[in-house]
Length: 145
Length: 473
Image: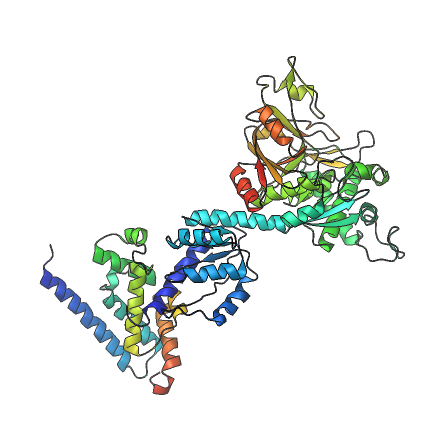
């Protein structure tokens, strides 16, 4: 059995990393797409308690699967096979993980992500492109971009 | 739940639904763009949503509903408003029996419940096959009677009732007008339609016909027909195709004996055999003797299998006093191959074999012969059924009133008549029980149509979707 204090320490370190990455995004002036992509990627990894070494590829769903697999200590293939909707809402764990991440991004950057586009995201670049476009649409008056 | 969670989560579920739907849909089924409705716990039900549904649903043939929490009642209203065939996503386990009972008891529309995506995919294939039948437009080159020819009297009794029941449309052309199209147009117009626009064979057509004749002759294992007669038959094939195109038809038949007795085919020195051969090879239903019923039966096989069918006179080959009874086309040599096991034998015979019977993806070896014994005209194609021994055949035919569909299976034993001219190419096959097959076939008539492979379940389900009774041996 893992030491509880070590688990807490691990969670806190990933939380701190996520907070730092988001702070960098929010303080960048001007914010550029490459900068957003780099630090949003790091933010997602930290939120998913992953490192770049854990990442199977650039596929957003695969990263979410790998994160779930890591926390459940099973293979990503088993996640794909058994992660069916369990609740009456019909969402799988990977879906819920993605949606909670989107909600966190929305809250941190004070934006409303386009729902339809969010469901079609395949890669990390798709994610940063969507966030970039949404920031441009919704924050043009702030002059950050 | 956080505010906005459902907005994002519903799109994730919708995306998954659409992915699974597209994955399960068979080839030829077009999954349209989804139309989305929304509802909150205010139980809202806006007309604006129904207007959006209406414009999306009108062009659709079949609806697959992704039911989430709290929308079963809206699904019933959707059935009441649009009356389209409908299924619920297999992801909505509890909505399926709920709505199957609720919609079924109200007799609102066709409702199909499914447990698995694969079941839904299979059914979409059946719905597509039904649409193929409903969108069949048969070109009928009639002479004396637009409904029944002098030979295939077991064809559909009433085209009007077939249209009413199955949606099939019939496009008639007078056979003399069609035959006039087989020559280049003149300034005066055709003899039967002077001064009118026609679809005569032209120079470009003739260039293609010459090229096709060369290809057919060079590709054949044996050629026992003169090139000029092959050209004549190909002119008929091109003329029919042009008229089919002009009338947006996707199937064809002509009354061979009725036309023959005009003596015009003698004068023009061709038959329609090769027309049927080349059309069916392309997957276009086309049958001998103005057998409209067989044309639609071929269409059913094409719709469920995607293969190119064969058709012909179909008869048992019974033993009596230690000998096979005589059947047209069956030879002593052919019958000698059957003597080792003479039980439960049937034959199917006509000169409309083609190169895609054995394998729908590539041509098989063939011979070219002729129909008219003495004069040598009427190009026909020969297929060596000996090479297909062991193949499973699925056969079908509608009853003359269009109310029943015969479905049968057999196993190829060997062929006969490959070396003969006239209408002699045939396939011998074994059925499970000759008497039962015979009695069942007698409900529907002579010309059965067939493809290789077992498609009995697909045909049963197609018949059910068409509200046609199944007759099986």
